[in-house]
Image (cartoon, rainbow, N blue to C red; front, top):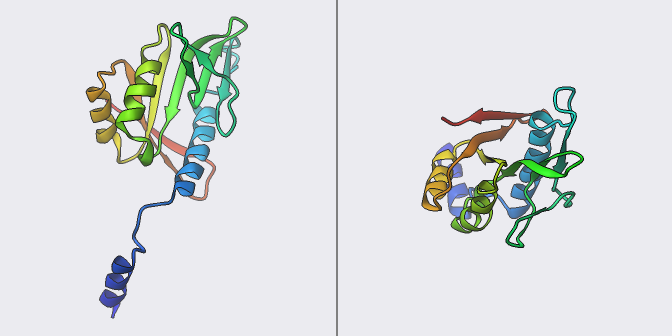
Amino acid sequence: MVREIVDERQLSGAMSRPSAKVYEDAHLQAVRNIAEQLFPFPTPDYPHFRTFVNEPETEQKIYTNYGRELEPDIVVLQWPEKLPVMLAEVVTPDMLTDDNAENVWAIEARLEGVQFFLYVPAGHAAQAKRLLKKAKIKDVAVRTWRNITGLKTIDINPLR
């Protein structure tokens, strides 16, 4: 009897991929949690740093020498000079694409004097590393993230 129910669900499409809205909500929550927990600037040790979060609305854009306008998920600026010090992109599985690697992460990772962090969902690190390698992106601090259900917290793990 149980087998019939499971087979029925698989055939009916109940096991399909999450919707775009589910990914959007997960992305927004992850960006906020990562910014609060890992980039809580200014702090007593770093009073000259300021953190800006570009989700859901853009707070701080970055402009390159080549006229590109960037909107990373998290921006840390040295204040009052407004120089970028750290940038972070938080991605969901649907954002792990060649286009993002080549046209967003590569540019952000190559900004001089700026530390670039890439936060990928737990279980997707290998895919992210392949994309970084294919786009010839180096010097990226890659971390995995996962929301802890029922808590306003996130679990972060650095990759070696």
